[in-house]
Image (cartoon, rainbow, N blue to C red; front, top):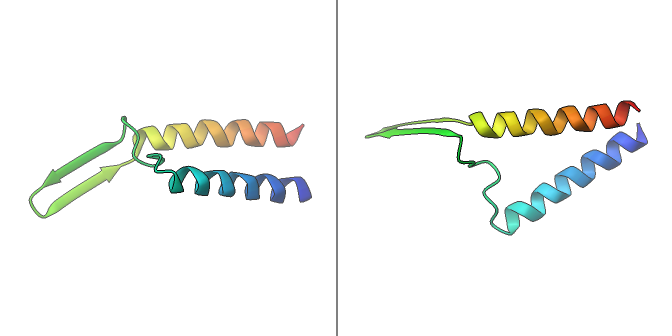
Length: 64
């Protein structure tokens, strides 16, 4: 349980640093954005894939 909390804290801290440096964390090139008049639709396809791969690797690492 202690390892998990440390890893989660480090991930949150790393995301905070990247966002504060201006990195486009949640606006990747594969994300779908549709804007028409008063309507806008945002579907984070590439972001979802990247987060899924990262979480899979993290959980596989923590299981060992």
